[in-house]
Image (cartoon, rainbow over all chains, first blue to last red; front, top):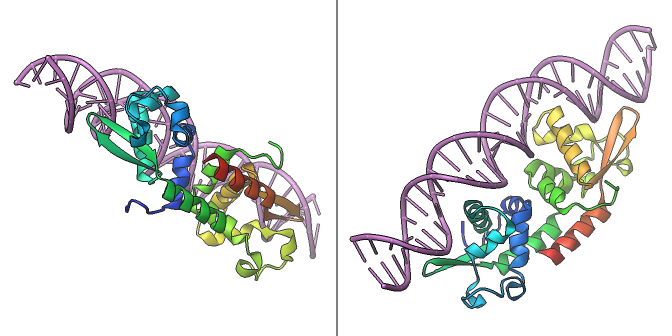
Length: 102
Length: 102
DNA sequence: CCTACATATCGATGTATCCCGATATGGCGA
DNA sequence: TCGCCATATCGGGATACATCGATATGTAGG
């Protein structure tokens, strides 16, 4: 799957889970929700930060993988950490297409 | 659940299935897709019409119930038939809220 | 190297969803 | 009332998803 490909069904499924929706919404305003992070937020938000949703490390990792498979987020490895960002072009294109299709 | 209530998660789940998405899209232009129907399309589209998606009667009925639980469609019983229509206010409100939230 | 830490993957378990055929419900007409 | 038709509901089997703890991978530092 290309990095800006839009699979509507995959995206809808990815959004259909509160934890994943929370993660995407938190990523809208990283400075608001992750001010305590050591690395600058320009790189994105560190995976471990999302365990605040109350789920285990492995479950959170799996949710992040789901979001990434749907191309809703991108990730960058820096040292031992992985930083996540919203994939705004895909999100915008998805919303546009859904508003047209639906 | 009130008739114009919006449960975002329920709606996303409902949209995450190709058959249900097809049904909603077919209902956008009933005259285009259901011109063969005997009853006037003002009442909506007869449940049986949706079996053209290739699924069994019971499965189609269950998908229609899912759409209705999410308030994406409304139904009206006329005689022995049940006619379905899109619930445009809910669909529009859902799209608006999703675009804001997401 | 060896250890510590962050993240990903594995294996197992419970739950939800999908789909069907069979049956129930409910209206219509003879 | 009886049978017919449209729709809904039931029961079961198959597949997918959610979640966890345990383990593997991979990076950094001593």
